Image (cartoon, rainbow, N blue to C red; front, side):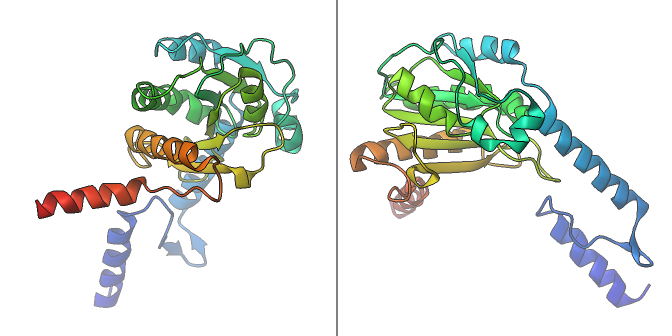
Length: 257
């Protein structure tokens, strides 16, 4: 092995420490090493499992109830199977029966949706909602959470209209990848209503500690967006996340002091 080969290996080894992506993989002739091929196949299978595993609504509801903001209602979309969920996103945006959702006229309603990764919701949903409640509960009235299965983000608009929430927070499982299968996203909509588009929402993604965004940081950003949306009167493309800038400013002022 030449000095150049050693340097090249060292370069890729150090770079891999900073990312979960598969970069600089070794080759055996014209093919990847068997270990890398098998690792890729295992990652693909894990990602498929994260999409197809059914949400344990009974366990999730019990854990959410333990947070102390009410017993969650459980609703579902018009999707009849996981296969149909993947083929018909439109049906995942429409509810079947919302009679379990009580009108509460709350400042904020939280919907926990399985989305494309029920695995993510089961792993991170409860601690994230707990952090959201800690961050928002002293300043706003919170409706009892709602659990939504076979759900797309826009299903939350129908739930919010029934529950009469002023601001909607949808916590949803994000599309699994070959490196991360348990990432959550938050979609925030101020004055939600059926017919809202993605331009009306703000998204906080990549929530999956310890490698992704922490629950505390995600809740901090969400609180900043809620406050901004109430001042602005709307969410979406007109609303910008200023939480990180504020944190930088605070840190700078502390250093100057």
